Length: 85
Image (cartoon, rainbow, N blue to C red; front, top):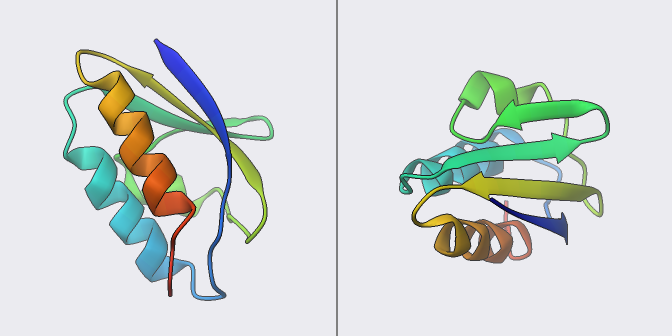
């Protein structure tokens, strides 16, 4: 299992970036979760991710566990730090 804390860069429109984040996470076999405050949400669940109410500049922790965990974290970090809404 690997964890990485990431400061996100996201515009005001959250819905499209969240949907894209779920698509990025869904490409991997690893279990992937996002920690934000006291919430721990499956990154492959659009409904779960929408409950996070992510804001620009917020720190999140990406947790991945599986055969492609390193690649998953790298892809999610790349996406979360380069989101253009």
